[in-house]
Image 1 (spheres, helix red, strand yellow):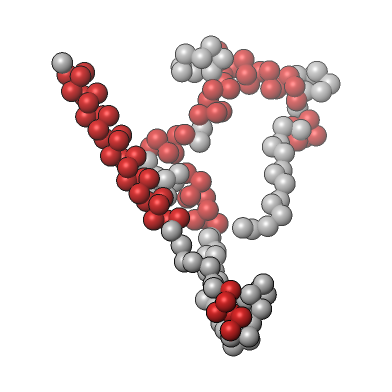
Image 2 (image 1 turned 30 degrees about the vertical axis):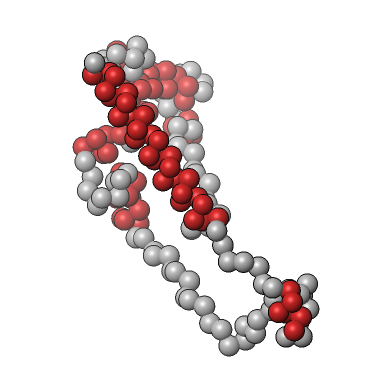
Length: 155
């Protein structure tokens, strides 16, 4: 019985929304009529000519200016995803989930010492080019993060 009543109310709601939407479109489509060609001909203007205006003295509104964010504000907004000027614990930790998932090999959302140690040892072996179990300054430099390309604009 509840399903029947809920279905009837939903159907009435959809029909009423559809009617309002159709009426709204009808209002939008009703526009000003085109100029009367006979009236234009009586004024001495060509009905097929494009309209023109003298824009020499017209001044438009000032364009909006982009606000410059400080370095600290940009760093803050990297974490504040919803721009409410407050960083929640969820927002702070969400930037680290990809790195955590790479370390969590078995996918159980628990990072064991073994998982961390295997990843660290594998990375060490990749950096140790000559295999002598020691990293020189040049070998260690290969682990530096790649520099990000500079954006073409600051927009």
